[in-house]
Amino acid sequence: MVWNHVLKELLGNKQVWKIISIWRRKTWIKNKKLIEIAHDNFLDFSTLESQLQAIDVCIYCIWVYQTSVSKEDFMKITCDYQKALTDTLEKTSPDIKFVLFSAAWADNSEKSRMFFAKWKWRAENLLMQTCFPKKYIFRPWYIHPTTKKRPNWLLYKIFIPMWWFLLKIMPNIWIKDIELAKSMVRVALDEKIIPNTFENKTIKNIYSQLITW
Image (tube, rainbow, N blue to C red; front, top):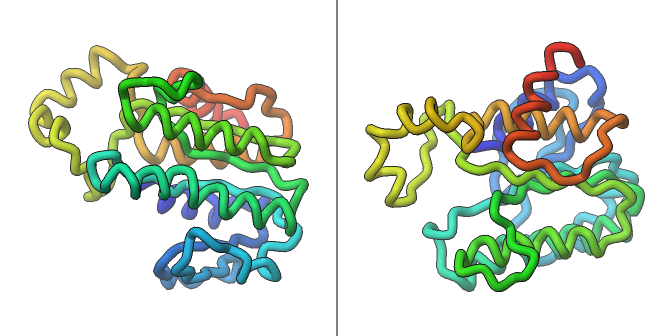
């Protein structure tokens, strides 16, 4: 939902001359900037070491809803996939800037009753333990889809008639997927960004400043 917008932003940005997209399946987008790698094992990226040399920026968008998979798979997708990639990048591109797509309420005590909050924090902590000199963490709250793809969690389906009313009266709890993607790309490419963690309100501020960037 977010990576598609990130990819489009990167493809259209003149600062970017090469994009390596790693996913289970190719999009078959025809663009001279884009190199797509279909990869099956996200617990081992060692076979891609030759293709991941001297990478400047990694925008990490692997994300899954807690209700979509088992607890074991959620932990694996949230933490183990990420660590497998960063372990490889520490060998091939130790000076990389890493932008992580995390979530609001990531809990640094790792004792939260919200299962996802504990493991999102674990993922953030794993990133902070890497050697990368620049690490950026995005913690959006509700991400509103602008395409046909929609969240599949039950509360969304139950309260969908109320969504627009709630979003209107509580603007700081949500962001559109395309706004999040544009903000992530801005942080990835802008050398002047100072904070390393972006909550929902900060993300919206970044997006509002894009006109003058």
